[in-house]
Amino acid sequence: MNILITGAGGQLGHDLVRVFSEQGLHRINAFTRQELDVTEEEAVFRTVAAVRPDVIVHAAAYTQVNLAETRMEEAYKVNSLGTRNVALAAVQTGAKLVYISTDYVFDGTKRTPYNEQDRTNPISIYGHSKLHGEKFVQLSCEKYFIVRTSWLYGRQGSNFVTKVLSWAEQKNELTMVSDQYGSPTYTYDLAQFIGRLIETNRYGIYHAANRGGCSRLEFAQEILRLGGKSEVKLLPVSSEQFPAPARRPEYSIFDDMAIRASGLKPLPYWREALQTFLFEDWPGKQDKEENGNGQN
Image (cartoon, rainbow, N blue to C red):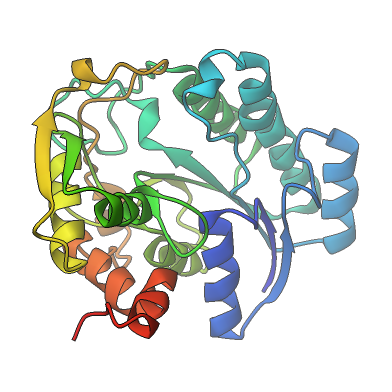
């Protein structure tokens, strides 16, 4: 299969390339933001026409949630119009399109896991811009997969897992929000799921995150436990004590109803995924072991 990936320099993009390469079944055309700016319509159409992919995985996005509140034009340009450009190019070449979306399309007031049929109601500019991207995909394409995910972490770059471990090296006490709930997701597991999904014609919206859910505080506790830093004390606080420019959904744990209904293999549970990342795949693990601080 001939696959084109946008946003290949990000956490998910990195693992998409990794998974598709490991499978050895595909021709991979991976483009970072510098190599393909999805806001440039002509560049998108020219690139897609040259590659003629069977599948486009559109992982490029403006993900600076707080900055989006003051840089609205930039967020909408990338997440909405950029997605429109990719969707129209996919239609022109007959490619399947995978659009990576987010739990931020919900307002977090439901208090039970969100399934794909629940009403969207974003409460941030980032969430609105990603939902607009979803609408462009649905209006433009017939062969599409909208894959909503949440709380991503992986090998590439900085994320909540690596930040907590880094903070734990510097402090004996960490303040952690206790009233935000979501589904932490390891990008390698998500990339593997996308690899299975594109082999099908079961188009539609999917909630794809590591199964189950937790609070930010519970997630940090498990990171520290597995990272050998249980002695670091966590001080629970409410979101109101840490105001941010962008509102986050307080509750966005996912129900993977569409995955189950399609007979696809679900992602592993979040604790299992975190353990796999920390003990097998975290770049910092090797550094710690070389310094004599690794797990036995």
